[in-house]
Length: 363
Ligand code: HEC
Ligand code: HEC
Ligand code: HEC
Ligand code: HEC
Ligand code: HEC
Image (cartoon, rainbow, N blue to C red; front, top):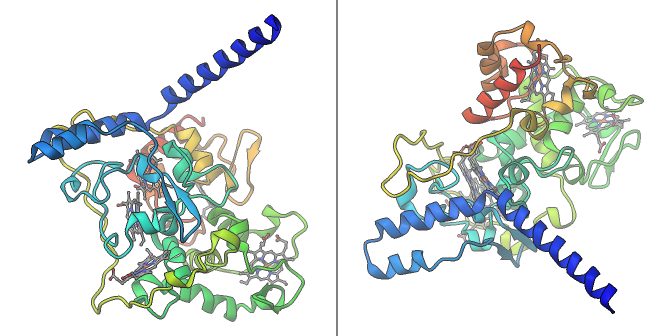
């Protein structure tokens, strides 16, 4: 009896230690304190102040019944529907648009942005684990998500152009000679009907540059494709999803077309100064090495013994270029290699600086 009690108390201590360790590792309590603190400080009414002060620091999750998903992005992104936070840095910023017609309690965030809805750290939420299909969709790749629900009929070209172009290319290059999509096509290559659930955007992109580097015995030809064409093909393939990844519920198929003159939400400018009450916002810093695998560089590039073979080996890359070249390359690869195939990954400025710092260590 005494033995079991001892074991039980050991186990309980271990669990408790793990919980404490886990909560210290988490970033979200700091964002929540900053957010509710700022709301309380600026509250025009006593009632709102009391509301903000009584909020608990906890995981905020939405269960999206119709989509059969759990979404926790708002654990950090607390201000998406609060118009007072336009000038605040992420993750406490007002959403640039679209949430009136796609409210978070019905659509969540992952349905448009991709990402790992259950994650509780920035890197895990945005970049997913390596080789997973859970990376945030950025830039034109995001059209894949819009297209899943809308098709092209209710979307203006601005929100569907990349997908439509990708589908044209699949026809032009006669991919269905070897592949099936939705029951039609040949059998030399794998069925692509749900390839978007199986492979992530960077993997699909890299495979077009060099199929044999991704799969040694591949008999898929290496098509001469421009950087843009690979992006369009990849965006189209990302619309081909299955199971719970795919939104098939007809209630979601938008019957409502965009108003004439509808525009894709604009990127908000970098915030200049934080509003009163929020100067305590914790700064989020990336680790360049984590980003190197998280954002997909490692799928194509080898450092040390590890990584892909689609792009050049980067072991001593800091001997070849200045930091300034890295920054230009990461902002826009076409600026450094106009005819090259390295993808535009739509990294933000903070990620670019962290990656450039990391590349500078590779001497
Ligand atoms: C642990 C907190 C946290 C969670 C959870 C989280 N985010 Fe973020 N998010 C951040 C932070 C911090 C930034 C700002 C990052 C930066 O400045 O580079 C950010 C930025 C973003 C951006 C802008 C990206 C860019 O390149 O500038 C998008 C889009 C985004 N988040 C979407 C999501 C989605 C979708 C989810 C859920 C799958 C999610 N986030 C979950 C903390 C979080
Ligand atoms: C209907 C689709 C849709 C939904 C739902 C949605 N977003 Fe967005 N979001 C967009 C679009 C489109 C942009 C414009 C930015 C772009 O083109 O990359 C954007 C921009 C953002 C940005 C700023 C990124 C930047 O680079 O300026 C963040 C952060 C963000 N969304 C987070 C969220 C979070 C968190 C949720 C869930 C509460 C959410 N979004 C729900 C479509 C959506
Ligand atoms: C999960 C399915 C789903 C996704 C993903 C989705 N939508 Fe929608 N969208 C809808 C539904 C449903 C409506 C109709 C909303 C209503 O009025 O009830 C709608 C309405 C719209 C409208 C018309 C109303 C308005 O805001 O002008 C536009 C435009 C639109 N969506 C664009 C987009 C874009 C752009 C994306 C990708 C960034 C996107 N949608 C992603 C389901 C979706
Ligand atoms: C001559 C036949 C052939 C043609 C034409 C061809 N492929 Fe392939 N493809 C293959 C074979 C074989 C594989 C399996 C080996 C591999 O992974 O490379 C493959 C693999 C793939 C994969 C990876 C699928 C997975 O889940 O692993 C994708 C994506 C793909 N092809 C897309 C395309 C697209 C898009 C086109 C047209 C631009 C195309 N293929 C044209 C033969 C072909
Ligand atoms: C889909 C594959 C792919 C991905 C992902 C990728 N690259 Fe590249 N990269 C290439 C290719 C291919 C080249 C050769 C130039 C070209 O074709 O554009 C290249 C070139 C480079 C070079 C110059 C190498 C030299 O010797 O001149 C650097 C540095 C680099 N990439 C860094 C990165 C970093 C950092 C990331 C992640 C943010 C990244 N790459 C993501 C494919 C990729």
